[in-house]
Length: 223
Ligand SMILES: Cc1ncc(COP(=O)(O)OP(=O)(O)O)c(N)n1
Ligand SMILES: Cc1nc(C(=O)O)sc1CCOP(=O)(O)O
Ligand SMILES: [Mg+2]
Image 1 (cartoon, protein in one colour):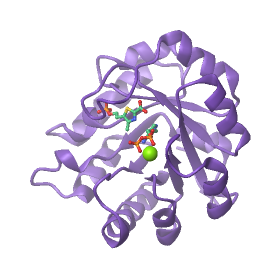
Image 2 (image 1 turned 180 degrees about the vertical axis):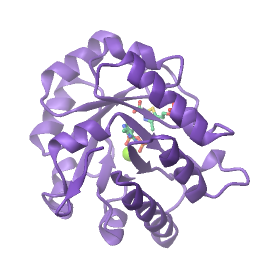
Image 3 (image 1 turned 90 degrees about the vertical axis):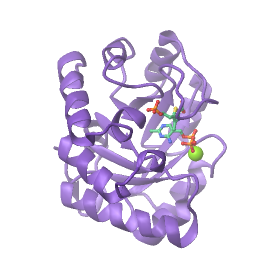
């Protein structure tokens, strides 16, 4: 596993950590706490965690972030906060993931500093080049298929994925409809990993589901 040295994840460590990127979703908690769900994903082999809670703000989001950061530190896995740079700064998260409608990458980088991880969602080559120039460490690109988790997200053709990957030097993680059945399709996309919401967090047994995804990634992707 890649390691964080002197408070910084190296570019190579970030690339390796994108392999199985777990994005949280409180919709699937049921009787479980968010921390229990993330602990199970880490035990199953998640290599990167993003706190994505579109309902929580302020202290509530901070409390979740503090809890998940501690779990990720113990597991040696990078932890970023979706959208909320202020929260990431307040808790000392490893970084943030921002989309095209969120805080601009340059601003997030300026606020978080050079050692933070800044991930950016992009759907086009132009956006991807702009994000790289603005200091992004990795790109989230999707969707692979349509997904009930985010019905408004678009779907990209394989050629569009490959064009984005070829246009930048930073790593790319595929998102949107990634599950045990679709992971093998990622081998055609030249991406560095898979970002997964429901195929991990909607599972009854999150640890087993994550372990199975990790196994399929190891078997089918050359990353
Ligand atoms: C790894 C990763 N890739 C893409 C996204 C989507 O970000 P965004 O477009 O800002 O949409 P929301 O997640 O904020 O709804 C992501 N979160 N993570
Ligand atoms: C948060 C998010 N962003 C997407 C994009 O295409 O940018 S798709 C998505 C949700 C992915 O959920 P699931 O793994 O359950 O399909
Ligand atoms: Mg966003």
